Length: 345
Ligand code: SAH
Image 1 (tube, protein in one colour):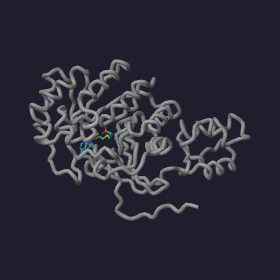
Image 2 (image 1 turned 45 degrees about the vertical axis):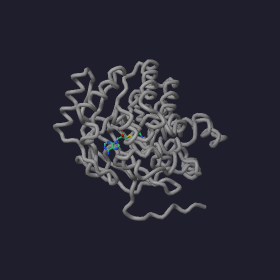
Image 3 (image 1 turned 45 degrees about the horizontal axis):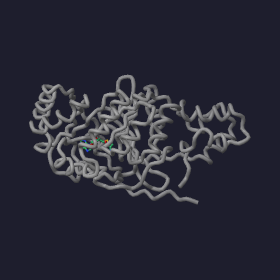
Image 4 (image 1 turned 90 degrees about the vertical axis):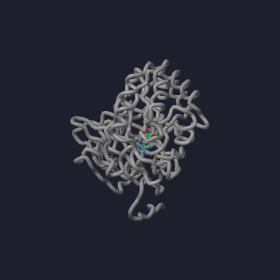
């Protein structure tokens, strides 16, 4: 596979630029990371070196399409990787800052029935460089607005691609300069991944896509639950919380009659309370392969109020980007036109 611009560590870059003084390596490294520059724009670096870097370290992401909604506040970017696979990332602008939602895999193997990415299946893991570059491209796109938050809520299951995701996290934190707490890893509940996360020193934020708090319903919605049932998940989360002293978020996509009943609220309450977790309620977004409808707005409010009455903190997440299929669970990196794979020599 082609090594791309952000796949190298700093020492690997130094090796590649062998013969160049240390300060040059710093200029290049800081330029492409903390200053989000393309090699061609590293004006403090001699021209020949700039073009050498461009050739030696090609970009990982070729832009194919960009669509926006919410008056430009939500931007979905479709990228092609060097081997032809596709992925999407989503940029959400707020008043004075932006959040980027990045993908960790092309496709996803978790097969959650209601999620568009799960419906298409798994293509491959993304490399560290392919993940980091999504953040850089977002920062370039945001201009004056600082990208202050990174959420691993795009395509794929980040904890199923732990090593690459974790080196990307370290790079996003240490070299791009985004605080660990402003980096959120969202998982469907890959318990060994949560256990590994517990061992790491960077205190990233953890979100868990729960959607059901009884095994029967959860087995059906998120098949990974058959491997790591709720009891195991709760134990791993309890350990994470004790080790990190961080509040965990539980994501709950609200589906009419499936998980929006009073019983479901009681089950969720019983799961969330011992964890002191925060619950995010997301109205189910439509996807091609799942016909069940979203909960009615009044059922969502009732559900939220019930949770609050059990002493569980809950918020209803405002949905962004639904009309451009950029909202939670809608990413499927679909192409309307066929683009030929890049020729390789
Ligand atoms: N695999 C990870 C990262 C993806 S995050 C995870 O599952 O957490 C995408 C979020 O959108 C998850 O919380 C997912 O459960 C949620 N989601 C998936 N399909 C959805 C849909 N149709 N409507 C609303 N949320 C959905």
